[in-house]
Figure (cartoon, rainbow, N blue to C red):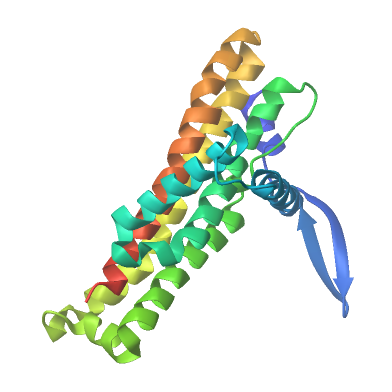
Length: 234
């Protein structure tokens, strides 16, 4: 398999179309994978939240450890108001973790080609828009619209266009960082898998599919918490 074939096989494909009012809505592989990931998250949440006790067992200990990690992440990036965003940040983080790691099934289960939804630019753009929307929402909620608007002219009015540009560049930065790293990692693994035996791709998968996937998920939500922290500070 040459590189052009790898690029073609790794592209996002339309599985079927839904026609609503004579408008065809394409349902891509990425959308289906997002549905599957959402079901996985719901299933995990149900399992980890069943029969909680005052004296936690191993399962409850895992749940509390995850919540504590996310809470600390929110408090470090946002401050005292961070607890209000634990649910939102936790959902984005867990979604990205599963989305980025789901590609390891290509190595664990043979003949199944699973493409991470974060390799779809439209998915990453949507996540970045959600991220910057939460930043704007937080700024307006905690500083009121007037206070949030005044922040664009602080410390001097001449800085206004640069503040606007900053809010436009933040989602672009998040998109390029996440999409670029996940896509490059997927492409490198696809090329190596086509050229060398299974053992080497399996070994490299520990980095590209696991470590890098976890790292990019963390960076995305960490930057989101920092942006929210900047927006809500007085």
